[in-house]
Image (cartoon, rainbow, N blue to C red):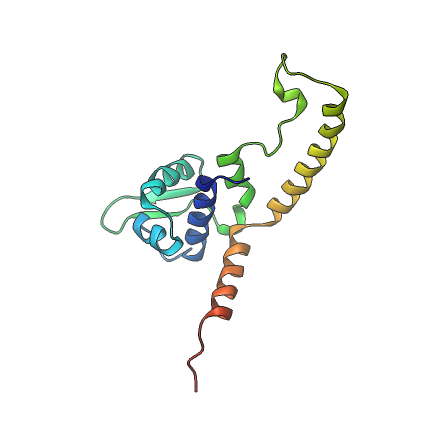
Length: 146
């Protein structure tokens, strides 16, 4: 359903959100922390930067960081960039598409599903996801206290 490329982009943005305010993060650090193949990550980060979701700084202390606060970046922003529309509307199929009554009936279902997903994705900011990830890491980390 969601491509590996999109999943990697989501994980990269999560890592930037987890490190928000700590300075630029190198591709190598993102790849290691999120278990993303580095060879894919360069192109993904360029695409995120071109879309205005991430930004970068060159140099020895360079790397990537969020282009705006994690509270202002939604999962849907990344999904739209890498996956496009989740459902193809009948009107968007072009003039030569085969349209019959069965497809018309399902069009309403796809529209409702897409609207529900957009609502869900608009509530899911990277700040919220990063907080959930921090809680998860804290709750699953071993406790060596005496």
